[in-house]
Length: 228
Image 1 (cartoon, rainbow, N blue to C red):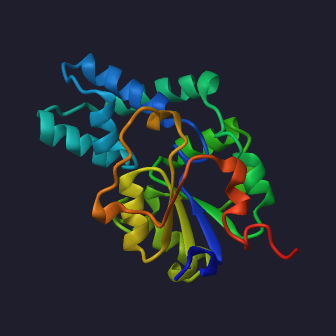
Image 2 (image 1 turned 120 degrees about the vertical axis):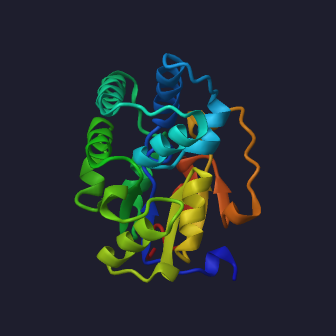
């Protein structure tokens, strides 16, 4: 089926790396915090292994890969430093507000971030009024991305058929989750964390469309602007 012929009842946006340019901040901070504890990783490693995953999943990966069992206080310290950095450095992705404001279809956000971080991020970037209560986090489902649980939960609450949902994601983890949910998936590659990186997509994480700028988002599908 031609992409233009697909019909959508709901657009599900990831948050970090899609609506807000936050991933370069959080990934760089995680690299620094791990280096202080003797774990040397680079941006490519954390992007491949941590991008789009929930905090508990990331901690489990670190435990398994490096034998490092981070204390409970680490999470509190990391989140506090991250939110402080967000206060000064966090930016909305260029073109996002106009795209959300002009989108004629229902929308929601489904993110692996914690509720507190997601709510703060949307507030700091001035997007909270455009999302409202339709914010879904990994804490609401048994299994986070790449499992389809979060996207299926969002669709169910919003009363949409998964086959008529469009997911906007940046990470391979999120793409896999959207595809597993039986949804159409588009990949956004315009975030700072994507700059200079290979965007090769494995067969199990190949989106239906790739775009790198929200300036023309409303022109990508005839239903986005609504009836003429």
